[in-house]
Length: 214
View 1 (tube, one colour):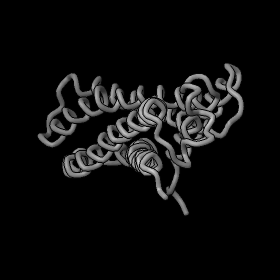
View 2: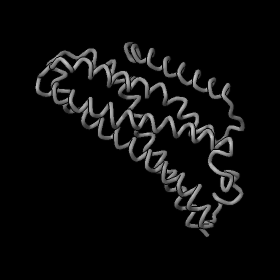
View 3: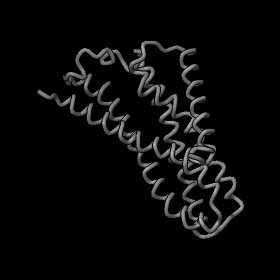
């Protein structure tokens, strides 16, 4: 018999994964595909392309981030507080060393907490830095304007998006692989971040020439 707890947890996990793919997929599109492509466009072409492409892409981008965050918070709340406090059962809950031990008292829980912290920083960057800046930039490009503050705002959005790209790789390890890892310590975390940043750097460097030749 399928338990309510199993249905809730698996549904939230499924939504979390799907929304995360939408969010991070668009993040990589902006940084690895659209960024190099946009540099090749002249002013008239940008005026046609940007107002049509960017609002659509940014809609999926920011709402993917929002649903990822909300579903993750709901998952943690249900799994570690609601299900535990009210005695919900199910195959996911039974025999799981995370349950009842507290989120921060297990190695997988600590990895998930670290990944969640990185995700929260990235979500904040999307909603409070990247999106507000891009909304103004899109309007200026659409109207053929180039105000003095446009350069600084473009740089801010670009730098923040790059930061999210670098944070995304260790974040994905923490959320996807950390729950299956048996050890966590400062040196291990630093190695994960170093490898993650190196991979992101390689992706960005490759993106400048990717597809330029067959």
